[in-house]
Image (cartoon, rainbow over all chains, first blue to last red; front, side, top):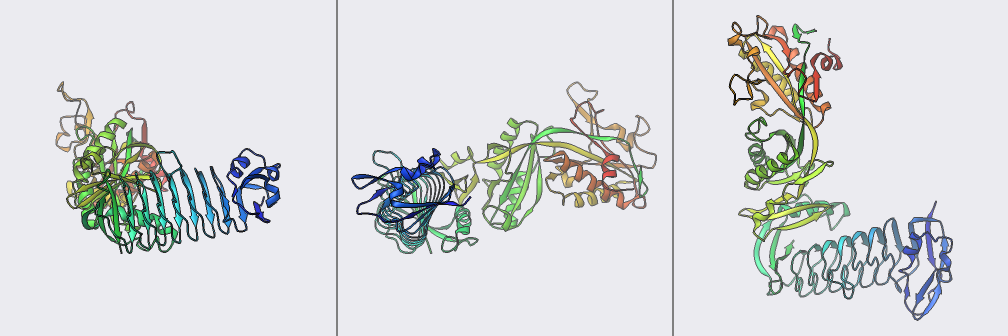
Length: 269
Length: 303
């Protein structure tokens, strides 16, 4: 069986919501997939009108074409693999519960919001609220791993509860805002107000970062736990594994003392 | 059966089901990892009064440990799951938490989880924090040299304790040399420990005693100084007897260690004063595992 491949034929103006795709496949409706109704801006349109279908292995789904206006790709994913051979729109992997998503290009805002398990790997950049929270919910990302090789926008990991976000480049302003637990590591610096309102959890930042006054300077240390983290990330290659196997000193700041104040920013070189 | 002039008694070692776990202790360097591991396995020779039987299984290279530091692998056994859980917490709390730079990890991938750092974390008085790495939870407890890192749980498995054999020799020098040779060979066998001092025990016991309060007492049948007054099991030429006790994760591991150890003793042979090999048992009624000496040695291709 070859991978189920959906090639985008053309996309009229407006944004397309592709979130019904994986639930429909999980319900076993491969034969009627081309009739699956999708929301394109204000109108309904059948999936077959937009995508050419090929292959039948629903455990390996491939999306081809520029999908930067296609939202909700991989939403509620349970298992298997999903490859996006280009850019992805907003809400990639929303509420994901397992499986793995690979994006060869960039991804939009709200990647992996309310994610619980599984992994997302983005070769390019990603937008704001990555690993964040859905409106009305109490917690953001609650498990799994998101790896972005490029840069990430603002409010990354907002109200994050568990799991890991790894960023090869820079993370934008308010990284780890209102964070409850989990780990965010950025290897190309961070924007302003990192850890704003964070209660627990870890922000690891290599490079430039301005530390807010609500974080207490606890000095430079070599922490054994970073050995475990760097070794685990070693298999992801550079820059994530650069420090694997070395005793890397980290400068520890505890905060946000304006919130519960048991989180930490670990700055390292 | 006779190997290299050493008589192999037609008897068996009687061993018991135990609960066991493996812990990996790491440190800034091997010296401090071993300080921790040695203290952790101290006073853990027999469950009769120590609560647990424990020993260092082997040295670990940095590439084999979860945090990439040098370390030691430790096996610990107890008579029940409750007792093992209590011993692990008490011992790790007093010896690894306290040992400079040391960290503690579970070393088995299968089994029922028991608490390792799960309760020790409260030593952090609210400053403790956890990290989940690759699905395993680790606790970080702030201590005066930085942080004590300890995995939340370790896996417990059904194991075998009390595999043994007795080395009967002309005198005590010959017995020590034979026992040392056996232990050196047996330390290379994975999944086993020999919990007594230097791996060797001189106070083999029998069930019962003449005193009401004492459930076990000296194994007089193998005491050379009593040979004229008790029903002795010592051959005429034997002037000394030492025992090696083995705890292992499976009966296969105990068997392998017994074979390797007995072969090393037999290799020294009669010319080095080794007269016979025997084993301790309780008539076969108490233990679930019977390790027949002749059968084990025959499996190994010995003559």
